[in-house]
Image (cartoon, rainbow, N blue to C red; front, side):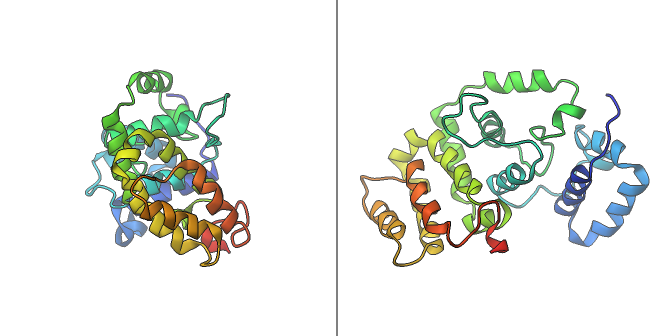
Length: 244
């Protein structure tokens, strides 16, 4: 594997990884070991089956994998396209990431799909090709829906830029539409959270409540455009909810 320059973004990513996986109480001592070991070597171990420091992390990441994915997509140096009708990339990173999440992987650990993945993973192209071969089934839709339905939209809005995070939600709704029409799982989980974010007298709240109350309707990606309009005067574009 060829040598690479460790960018400040990558440096911060590894710090974040150590904090999440090994715990805040161990952050200082583990980070010192990172510095002693060298971040380039640590990075290679990060992508190995052993994990950093030659051992598997003591605990699995606790936060919702979709929340973690939203933060990664928003902060990654590589542009994560969320345009549903993009004819250039077709939302490749998200579509492949959904398959990874459904398979049980977590963006906070052993994750390949990001800006420096192709630099350090020798079989990156083969890895991507194998992901494309995995069929997106109704079962896959149900599992992604299950995972995303337990995500805190407040957490996502504080970690990811506006309006990008709404686009991320839209991609989930688009790729689970067949199962959502029957289960209304995301409708029931997300609409109450979205209602809390918009002003009481805004039309978006009324429309969201109508969808929630009507068993024949379900949340669609297009409805999120109303939420975007309702929030655009409150949250500047390119900022998070905590920046307002």
